[in-house]
Amino acid sequence: MEIEGEQIIKKGKRMPKWIFVGYVICIAVIIFASVSMEKRQRSELPEAIDFTTDGALGMEEGKYAYLEVQGLTDEIATYGSTDDTSDSAIDRYYVAYNNGYWYVVDLNLETIDELKDIKEYTYSTDENAQTPNSIKIYGMTEKIPDELKTMLIDYYNQGVEEENKITTDDFERYFGSTLLNVRKSPVDTTAEEVIIFFAMIGMIIIFIYNISIYIIKQKIKNYLKKNDYKNELAKQLDDNVEEKHYRDMVILTKDFLVDLKSNGGFSAFKYSDVKWIHIHSVKYYGIITTASSIIVHLNDGKTNIQCIKIKGGTTDEFLDIFNKICEKVPTDCLKGYTQENIKAFKEYKKENGK
Image (cartoon, one colour):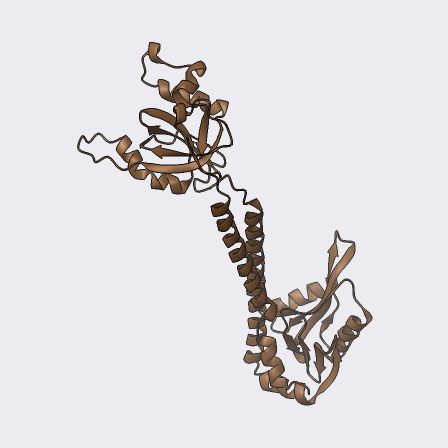
């Protein structure tokens, strides 16, 4: 049983189902990967060692450790894309205090905010200031870069008498053998993070396509509404269908073309409104044709509609549709993509103030 003309128009105006399905799949993948990541972080997390053991002297790299922070300096140094202060990939180095010892830490933005009260207390000159509770932070031990060592030595030696200044040889006795990087975890969740990243990219691509299809459908909807074509088109889809192509997805009626296969499933125009029609080809490096479509420019001088999009070059069926449209458009319609037609259409728009 054939679908009635009005139902064809309504169906064409709806968004393709695969867009909704795509959103659901991407969201499901993100949720699954996030749950998996959180579950692995809990189940595979090793027992943390005390970073303050022996003042971190001789502490090995690559160990999961904790540090109870009782005091915190201002930011000593940063490494990374420092132009973007909110970039989570930036290394932010501080010195944390515990029982009079200094420890080098690399903090993320969340931990910096968590330690805000402790840092304020560290620099407070108020004798009555209340000592905040220490906060335990966790991370991975790693080598202290030589450049950072130099900066830390300079930081320590500021305002210190010459005989009390330290050198590279003294560094480990004052700052320990390694730093604690809070931004790193002992559980490798790279696979889940990559999956989440690509799922989010997929959602962005679907969203952009969704918006573009919405704009195209609105353009066709406004065109039909402005010219009061809806009822006429529906009637012709019921009673005046002359040809069908591409598995009944392209319909030629007495006065209209309806394309249900391109632009999200709906394009339509009246032949008598066409001022210029031509074939548009997308070529790879200007040689291999990867896609073809028909573009019609309407006589309002503003509206253009792309339809009959196919992969690769033109086919006999595609050219047959193009030729049939050319037979039905007005006799003064421009046909083909030529420099003469480009110039003529520009002049037409100029003459008609469009």
